[in-house]
Image (cartoon, rainbow, N blue to C red; front, side, top):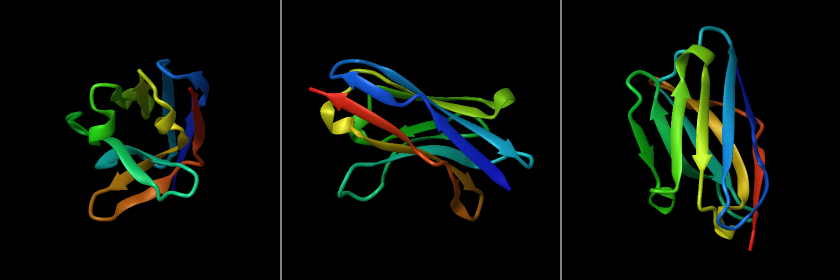
Length: 118
């Protein structure tokens, strides 16, 4: 079993920055990818970014390109999401998920709230 724990959320003014962390523990952690998703009130969960565990290739949704950076520390089994130039529309609960080869995103964290004030 894999456990994911997010941290780093909070309240920030528009234009500010936050860094989210996703720490994995449990059995040997070897996912295909780790991704960040977000869910705003009244909306469905949406993809934000992911990083391929082996090799480090990254992919972002268009709305965060150039503002968010996803990275990983394999030795610490931790993935980060550096968020800059934050906008009120980035307000959401942010979740990290582990994508297991052939099974999709089956492990999720509990989420961390990000609130961007205008």
